[in-house]
Image (cartoon, rainbow, N blue to C red; front, side):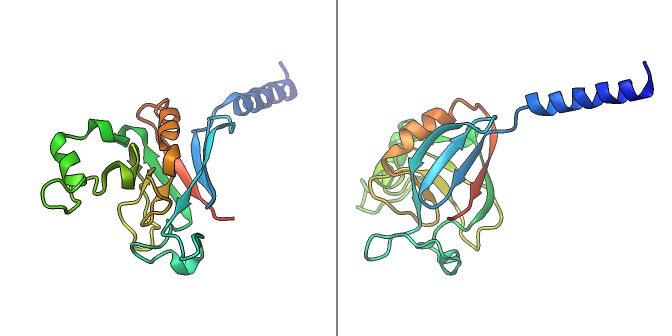
Length: 180
């Protein structure tokens, strides 16, 4: 085989390798929807989602000025990740944690799920990253009311989102937050 034919063959193999390769799944939040893409870039599921606390008129602001506001601001724009092994389900919490979460002892919501499924939905996963403007303990979760303290809130869509996400066992998935 001559040099040109060999180079062409290698280049075709390289192109086919790139064309047939798969990329990791990814999650994208744009301030209105949270979308899970598969390894080929196809949408698996996409649901309405919000972040931060709503304004008095019920709208959500994702301006950079709000990114560092603890307890009210949205998740800052940037690149994060989750690991599917870290998905937590309300049904798997102990009776003690459920009682603490719902304020059963003294009327104070406490424990690892304060407020229970009303605040967190039926499942959640911790968001990992360092560009958080001082906001800590960020999660993707659901809940009964729109809004969060720096998390991504799927509201009542969390069950279907986490069912789809559970297909990726022990997988680190990039989370891209890019507001429109």
